[in-house]
Amino acid sequence: MQWGKPGFERRRAAAAVRHCVLACALGAVLASCHGHEAGDGAADASFTHEGELLAVPESSPLRQVLVLQAVAKQQAQTPLSAPAVLEPDPSRVANVLPPVSGRIAALYVHLGDEVKAGQPLFALESADLAQDRADLQHARIGLEQTRKALARQQDLYDHHIAAQKDLEQAQADFDNAQSELDRASAVFRTIGLDAATPAAGGSVRSLTVRSPLAGRVSLLNAVPGTWANDNTAALLQVSDVSTIWFTASVQEKDLAQVQAGDTASAVVQAYPGESFAGVVRFVSDQLDADTRTIKVRIAYDNKDGRLKPGMFAQVLFAGRPHAALLVPLTALIQSGDQTVVYVEKQPWKFEARPVVTGPRDGDSIEILKGLDGGERIVARQGVLLND
Image (cartoon, rainbow, N blue to C red; front, side, top):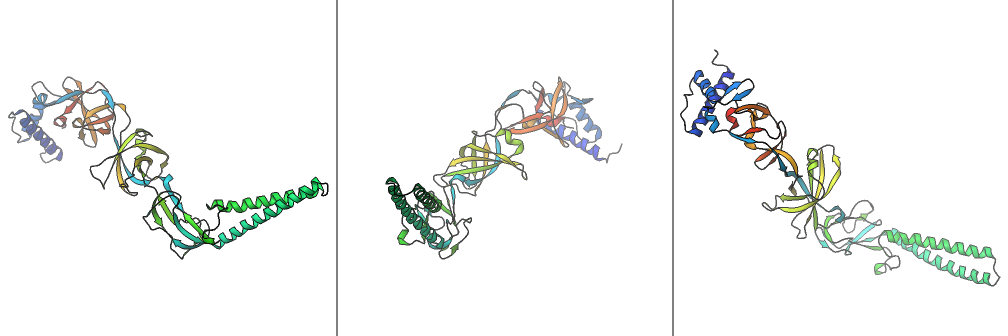
């Protein structure tokens, strides 16, 4: 016999552990743990091997220690946790662009200011705007002239003085003038100005840009005296954070556990111990190919402004109710690279069964594969059988 082999030393140590645990649990004095023969004797006194089964004799003190339990399917609702980031409601964020090219003549707000809908943000001086106003004025004059010409031709035609073709030409001129006025007026409607309203302060070059919604100035790229020539670059951003979104990243494998209408709660680092409850409003239809996650958004009332965009959070979803096999965590035994549960195949004869585990539910865990309902398992102290 080779006493120095690692396999023998592991068996000897396992026998010694079982011996000591049983001695503490039952208050009994077992055989001495010194030497190879003593170690094997302690193991034989506890249980024996019958092929793939571990048999616990009637005289074994393990019968007083092992806790057996029947496994049955039961209704489970396993909570699901996911990381999240706080974002403003996209429908309540306005990027304010320069409606025309020009110089920023005045800035009426600062970064972080609260603004009301319609409140002035900045003023532009624009040569393009002056030209647009001139075009509008010319269109108005032209329409008035063609209206008078049409009225004269209509009167002459009614008195059989003018030819019909002259009346038709006057009507065509009037229609063209009306189209030109509509085109010139549309320019002002596009930039949010009433074409019928005179220029502010009497300046045809001046334009005051107002806030489209109530909120806070969250971005400011406008500097008085500089030129704004890019109508795709926002000069300001106004954000209404009275409603804020917790945008959670849910793993692809957990997608079935979340759907719109589910309740959820969240915690943020800024307010430890406090929970923010809400309802899932939206589950994205697009999977992120890099992270294999789905964006899930929960809306929260934030009228007090305590929650800030950019904060990190942890969201806890209630999960979907489903039938599941739940076993105590204490029933799981790590054996090498496998997780096993000891299943009673015959009275006090056990099989080490590899299992696949699922989500944890308190002190229990769901078994996805490896067990069937109605089987009896070692719920506690199964580690004493792990040789």
